[in-house]
Image 1: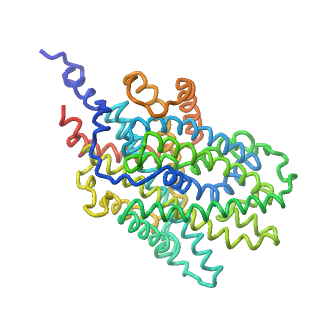
Image 2: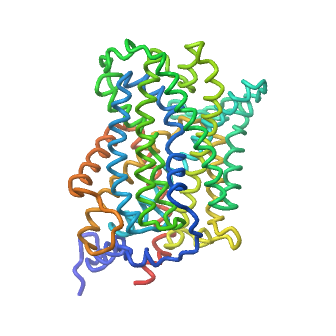
Image 3: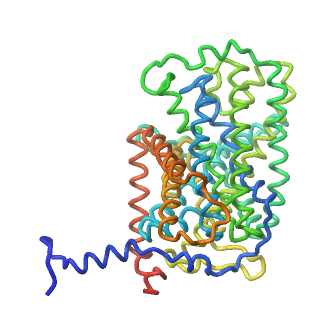
Length: 493
């Protein structure tokens, strides 16, 4: 006879359900999963992917807003704090990527440590992170692209280059525009490129990354000659209420600029297409993050030293700073070109990463199996690539850049926290598993990573938490309606 709980559900059934929801996918199953993707990427390609994903909106857009509204010259400290969180998570990602060199990133890692339910939760939030990154960066690309064309004497009608709706006071309001056509077109072009092949995409990204890094270096070298150090005083402006300057502003700015670090985990999503992944993936993650962190801190210092930080609240803060110095006017057009190139590579890498995360989830049966197909000729996950292009392009064509922006950081911070904890869990459950890279002082490093990520999450307001709750609810409905019943892990049991 079953023991009955007050709600009438047999205790044995309840325990069975819990075991089912938290069933862990065996590490061996992840390692022996279908290896249909072509291994073409080396260390240089992974560094290009990492730098290509990270350097973009962070330097060309986010820095100005964060300095003007929250941190002032102390924006450099915000980048250090955000970089610390990213670095701690990167070490954990490196250990996981060397141990589980398969597509899927944080989703796969959570599946091997915490079970199916939490794996779905993390995977679903990573989907939001990448999808919103593709669409929001495409909108930013549209703004810089239209500005670049204007500098060349070509004007794009505003009704074809802006979102038809805006989000104000909790309501959608028509703007009078028809469609953000440039944003839609760039997503369509990237989708086509990724459909054809990963190798072709990384070759394109290599050229783009060289261009935008060159622009950033030129900005630093020539901008340093015009820095007015008096603009750095006071270094931490007095608090003016809430998160408007002061240390509260520094911490809030860290959550904003954390958006700038989103992308290095895209290197881990390419593990299944990497030669010698146990060595190259950890190195690719750490090298790309180190390069980007140093560049971010230097650019933030130069930017706030060229003009008063309050003047940086524009869509083109780097161009704004250069415009204030006539002798640097020649760099403005080059900066616009670099921004367009930089944002293009971010879209490419985020699009590529999301397609492979969906590919992994479909391979586990949590999404329809049609999305786990690989193209016969190009050996790419072509259906998920097209799906990301369709949804991301639609969002970019219709919605403004600001909508749901902070949800990007929230999903990433949740994923980073999970990966940090997962390293400690797997050290205990699979201590003898081969690890091509090990987090040094793991108990301290991983715990600190969780604390820093949760601290940054705590800076978010109630509205952002509500958006996360709505997205999570949608994901749970999909899991209950399809994923739970079609899970291959449960089928094996």
